[in-house]
Image 1 (cartoon, helix red, strand yellow):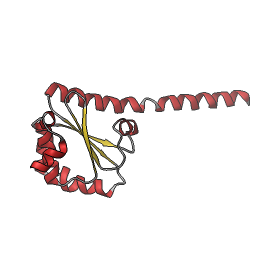
Image 2 (cartoon, rainbow, N blue to C red):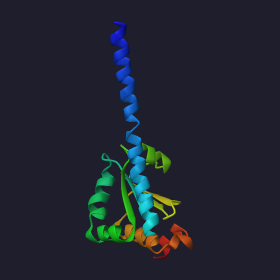
Image 3 (tube, rainbow, N blue to C red):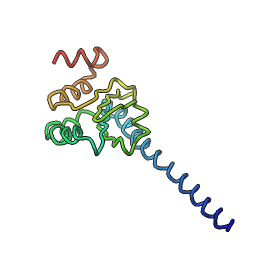
Length: 148
């Protein structure tokens, strides 16, 4: 009886420790994106979403799947989609409070700003241009968005 208890306890402990290996994968994805942004000298867009978010679905269909936006994301910035239900450690690290949220990050890894909520195609293009042109070095995000 005691032996079965200890064997069961052992497997529970091993299982719990194995769950910890999920989190390094998240960090690896983020670190790879940060390294790529630095190597290519491009800004990084972190797109936080949830599978249960209707605004995230709308943004995916109306903005992120748009051919012009997709081309800009491939060519002008480093883009990483982050499922907030799975990658909670990164959500916490970037202080995301709701979905969708877009965080802008310099090639150096320094966070510029976060934009919560649905973003129109027009404004998302502005965000890409803000990062591509490195306008964060000379003006705030709000000033840039107001000018264009």
